[in-house]
Length: 70
Image (tube, rainbow, N blue to C red):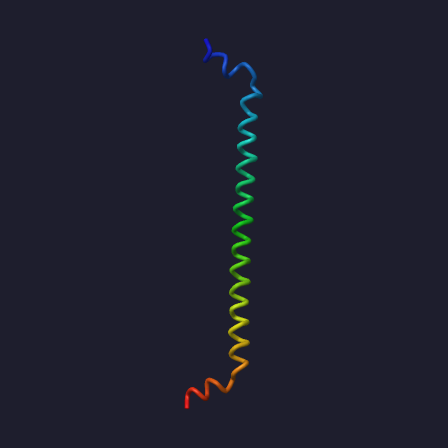
């Protein structure tokens, strides 16, 4: 009767892998959250730098647009 003894031999033994899986799952969720937040921050910084570069370029040559329109 091997099947009958599996569940009753050590009730705490079956819980250890479950708690390890839970901790592993929580760690993966935190890793994904961190990666997502980092990606959003990086995107925001790139957009800010691009906007600043465009403004610098536009402010550096105010007469260039008027000269091209003539």
